[in-house]
Length: 78
Image 1 (cartoon, rainbow, N blue to C red):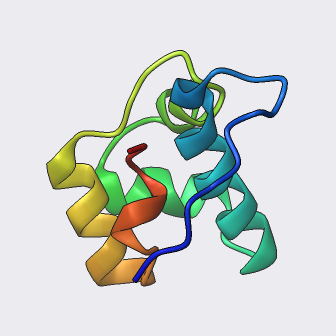
Image 2 (image 1 turned 180 degrees about the vertical axis):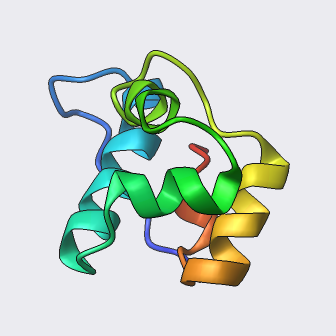
């Protein structure tokens, strides 16, 4: 059972998933360059998605889950 996140932060709910993914990457010393290489995109594309100017697709989330063990639930808000 997943614990509910307190969405009363100063940011809208749609900004939480990129921040959670970014936090995971930092905590596990995974660079945006590594993510970009795995996904076959530019680092700027990954940076844009992590800074909430885009979204990761389900396929991208699945690839990153499989290759880097990033939990799928970090990519999607309730």
